Length: 195
Ligand code: F6P
View 1 (cartoon, rainbow, N blue to C red):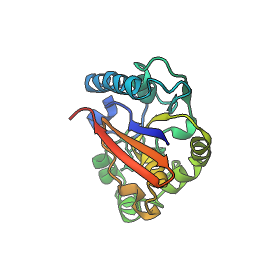
View 2 (spheres, rainbow, N blue to C red):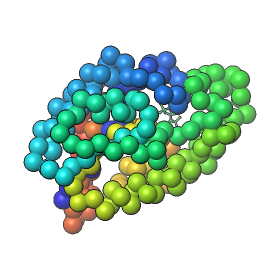
View 3 (cartoon, rainbow, N blue to C red):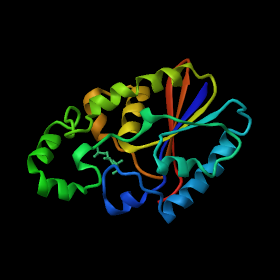
View 4 (cartoon, rainbow, N blue to C red):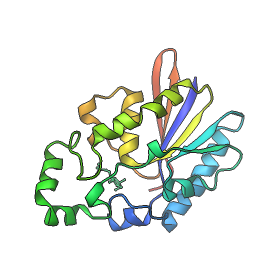
């Protein structure tokens, strides 16, 4: 069995401000997580010569991977966060105030709701297909550093969770979810590296 490690990027400036999307850098606390993650990964995958680190193309994941040394890094556009279209950069409160109908439609059906000029969870699930195929093909461990919506979808695939639950899955910051795929099914461990 070989592990797949899933984690969100370290806390970003937009996380602190409560803003969706964007391409902000990581906060001081996010930088501390990046160091702790590097430590964890370097120990956990010490003898795993063929392991690799996958990020999205957004700064916050690339910076979070920045402290990890000794493993090749791959950037995937398919791992970028859900595109919130016209709502990109807004807080949920602003969306509710400025576009109440959009806010309400998303609340009613978060899985299918597509942001104007953006994506739905179903869109994200679909674009993750090549990533999943490649993850299944890999024989070596992979560390995936990505984003809340994207990781909900990836996690649901490996943990065999129903489609309708995906937008609600808890995906906290500064926590590693380790998935082991063995003959007897899938095992999961969580490591909360910071509060
Ligand atoms: O808040 C962080 C974030 O990654 C946003 O960039 C993104 O829009 C959001 O989470 C996705 O989560 P939800 O689908 O719950 O809005």
